[in-house]
Image 1 (cartoon, rainbow, N blue to C red):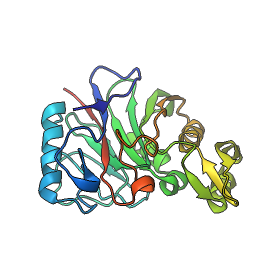
Image 2 (cartoon, helix red, strand yellow):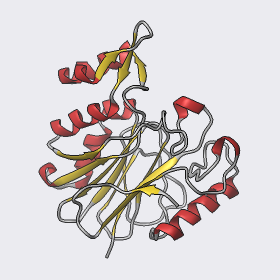
Image 3 (cartoon, one colour):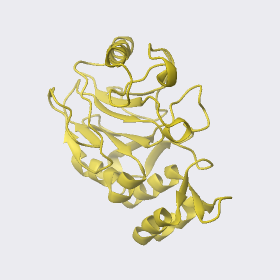
Length: 245
């Protein structure tokens, strides 16, 4: 099974990875390691994929999935819950409690502190990013932002993420520097947005300057990644982080 591990100076007791669509038993438009149970795939196949990932990557049980709603709620992961909470980020101060977010173009961001005492994950589509899901995740970690490392996982790249002028205006209204993250699209009235750059700007404003990753494009790499923008109905990757004992 092929996954991506962050290239960052995290403490030895921090484990993190972001899945690709490699391996797995899902078929058709979900072909590969689809981990999303809400996209129309057969639930038995999704559960098989999740179980296979957990075994191969030695992820501690149980897996704590979220019902993501493009918001800013951060769920504190400390024990297993029967029903996935409505949240777009998770934070854990305890060992062997994985923080998980699913994406298929939106930006997954993983966090840890330099001491290896807390981890978090965030699902940052443009709405959640603008509304402050990264800042909420940082606040939930309850440590000095200068001690936080952040990794930007696979998301839609800056040559593929076309948005309307209202998205550009919304970001610029809160942070003038955001203008640099948008270039005019060949389609009149549209803009190409760099979600990685937008995230770096928000993280820097929050005091997090140790930021890594941000080199993939889910839209242009169909062999490795699912992409909602590219395919419509499709699977989901997962980005996970947890503390080991």
